Image (cartoon, rainbow, N blue to C red; front, top):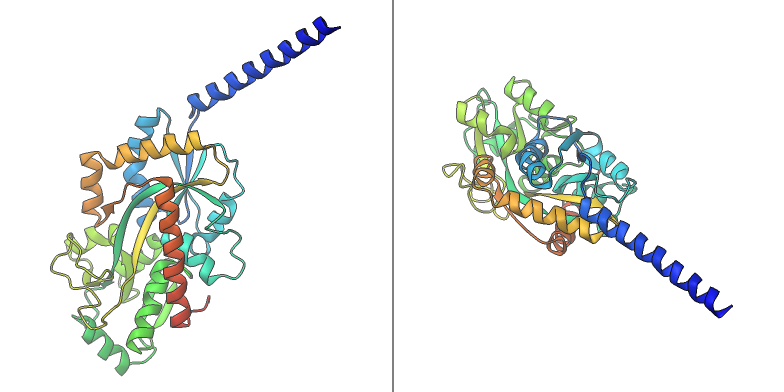
Length: 327
């Protein structure tokens, strides 16, 4: 009997060793098929630009294609709400963005996810200010002129945003709250559609991430009035900040990163973090980020989670003090 029990015990141990070996092998083999990167906005905006900046090089490093899946709606929160229900296996990732991850939960009462608990942060990609871009036909040449013009024509001036609850929406609302002007918000479904109407002259202005509009500013189809950071953009050194041009203390800066669903194995998170860091270290990737007005921010998963926590605190304070409500 003792011999049989010993044989049974040894057999169980052997099975466990085999299963453990399979598990380890599975983790080592990741990724064994293409990875989907959800971009929570339609094509054409800054989030897609950021995704395109890293996907090819990360694909090369990982040995599997990263497929971009654009899904718009409610400032990116629709995609994020669906994302947190995805399998935690590393094959579905989310392009994290300040508007979606930090602003959405502060603006919508039932956003459907908790930025502190429902993600496994992989790492930051970069940070970029937005720019107050105007159509050349709009008859103002400075922030002070814009404020005077809007006060003379209350409600007649409008600005487009990538959608209710996005950083570009809140940037405009903060501008209104700090300047005391009355301008009309026109929400779109993503940066691409608002950019089309801005270039076409259908709306006079928009607070738009630099990656989406830089080429238009260079070509003269749009004019940069001011940037939303506290310091000038190296890409637009002659363009003043909104803070120095008439609204001291004004700041809205956008952060981008990579997220996995909560519960994703740490070995997979680390592999993706290493691939992202290696991608951000490449000179051509750094050049592409610089051209888009972004600064690379390589980080650990823990540093990205800390950044999310800080972003949520910052944006919730802005939303509360400016009295901003979801439209």
